Length: 482
Image (tube, rainbow, N blue to C red; front, side):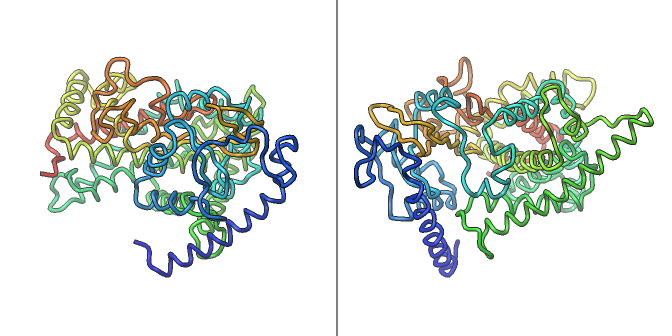
């Protein structure tokens, strides 16, 4: 819980930062909304039928409620309450210092995913831009960025992904062995303790990410240091955009700069290693080396760009894989009947093999286990959705959406909608059997041009983790909280 002094400081900083944003926006408003739809007082005219909703307090907007729901781990409530109050399809609000129109429902998702680069362009919150740099290639929606995304997709899927299976498998096996050795009285580590589940998922995620993305060996001290840096970054990412000493975003920016500098040093060292290896005909071959090499697409991967991309991959994997792994184990502990079905499937896969090493083909057989992961991501998606900036005025559902405003599509708007998922609060993996959910209703990885390139990477990381945790003890690890 936040102390009273922290809350007062937070409110003061919010007033200052949003006042600055408000004044800045007034100065540039005429460039955001064409003159032909403004009246003499600068207000929108013509089709001024804006979506229903409330932009909240002056300067504040509805940011306090938005962040409050995050702190209480109920991010879905912000959108769901307004969908019920205003419209199940569209409403307006003001968050992050921006006028925002929230699109909800399957049709809303389809519209947003289908109109990227025509009516909409990608937009990042100020905290993200400050962490990764607004001029970075990962922050811009241009041709080079698209080539960069294609490159990222190529190193996170297909043959590249097959090579990571071995790393995921070896990492979790090693960690389970270490955890068992360090457990009380040398007994088998149990999964009914949430602190143990969280620690195991955290170490698995950061260790795998450092090995795959940075080419690091099991340097525990270095990996732990990177983990602490990423935790500080993520805390700042989900905070108010206040870059002042003592605030989470300021700490995150400083930590981001320090970690990026360290990664850039590693890149230069690897480049020198590659050059030396070429001379000796012994070329280093891993993901980091691949990212440094030029590509046919001409994507210029200078040290800073590669470093920024790797920094983003580390942060994204730690956020997405870690949280999902924790939540999957939590659900197995809460629902013994689901755990039994997962164990049965994993035992069948293990018994059909002559070795304990997991393969690409093994993961493809984990149908029910993947349904469990999907239902976990439905209830607790690791991303709330995405933001777009409106490139030109357009009408949607009879409402005018002004140029310069932001659009937000939200995962929880459909994931928690009983129209698409009956009894949405219930954990039910069977929702994903057969044809699964209606298109554009299940969107934990986004859609359209900006579908998360790491969706397959995440799937394999989670399923290999899950297989080893439930199978390593022959089903003897205690999961049930009873």
